[in-house]
Image (cartoon, rainbow over the protein chains, first blue to last red):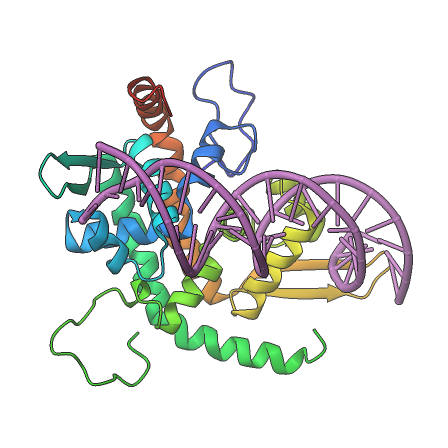
Length: 136
Length: 136
DNA sequence: CGGAATCCGAGGTGATACTG
DNA sequence: CAGTATCACCTCGGATTCCG
């Protein structure tokens, strides 16, 4: 990507959008989406399809109602997730991925699978590291 | 993946993404790595190659020394990054990706590029959402 | 220069209670 | 059921200072 310094873009949107730069809007968006709960929610929705609030809370193990609500709101606000309220009694609220969310979920899933594959290696590395650094 | 001994396997219920289960070791690893700063650091190292501490601090815009140190330690401890101290004066410490880190960086980079591409869409979605939910 | 140590405020967590 | 509200924590992250 923007590996080498391009000549200063002449006030064009050809300007390098780099998430590494704090000033870039994409950086703030990145910080909002790259969140532990948000990514797990995306994975759950991508794997099991649309789910109710309580299903998500059970699916994404360990998430509190507060954080689940908050993360879903963020995902909804950025156009990644659709929230549908079915006016029944008791009420039924279903969350589903929008195209934008499906795109990101497709990129996130490999990280989940990679983590599962490589966890043994990383746990071994931890042990080695901790033995080499007994003090701290 | 399903590293640990399965308790009385409650029938099927075979999860494909163990990272969603709190009990699975990969979940804790995932939570450690899926961190804003860690991912930005990986992107910087992947894009610009090995870098010194101060270079990383300038490259990953906005990161404090504390969080940079902490994130680098975590990455080092899990075997993703190698820390090399050159005994000079002033001291020179260089960080570089290990194979494991290169693997993850390759998965993270697309998310960064995707964020940059889709930021305009998400900002638009935000505006729409905020207008539809004036109360908050 | 590359941290470690310290302090401190913001924000996440869990429990509980309440609403529509 | 799907939240919101509140409170008591307690961890996290930023700023500052000090050290080899």
